[in-house]
Amino acid sequence: MSEKIEFTSNYSDHSTDRGFQFEFNCDRCGTGYRTRFQPFAAGTISSALGAASSLFGGVFSSAANVGEQVRSASWQKARDEAFIKAVEECKPDFIQCPRCSSWVCRKSCWNMQRGLCKKCAPDLGVEMAAAQSSRTVEEIWEHSKVAESDREMLKDESWRAGVRATCPKCNAPLAENVKFCPECGTAIRAEKFCTKCGAKIKPDTKFCPDCGTKQE
Image (cartoon, rainbow, N blue to C red; front, side, top):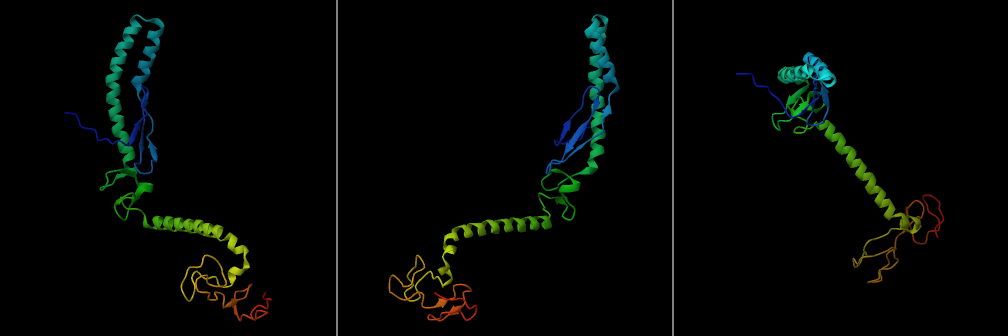
């Protein structure tokens, strides 16, 4: 009984009637490893017979047919032997994950410490760096949105003068920067702040005691 050939689905066969070559790919990153070309001597003879049959026919045609039949049997046998050799050549570069059964490349997709592929056991250092970078990008976009929404408010210097969201007495919501509560009449801007540095000053102060800016 012939020996069974172990094979996987992560390979491509680039063999021709002149020789054999295979390419194995990582199931995770797709990195490919192509084996060295193994020539098939009988393929050259068969090609020569085929060319002769197309030119002369007759006995050469019969010889080509016989050669093709021989080539088919011998080629398949040689191909199996070449495939076994190719598997042995590339096997050290791959390892099968015991959890998901994927064949991954040792170089980039195998977590040596965990004994699993990086899909099942990601590299925590890499994941942390990626998460931090993603968070930074999110914060940049969020800041951009806030800046856009506050652009009109920033044009008005009065925003420094203690804008409140609710009335300090009745807690009524305030839709804008107002001086008095529209519900109870309480003075909202009882406290005064410097229009330049934002320091708290008395309502009748003409010049800021911290920066000297004239108050209007």
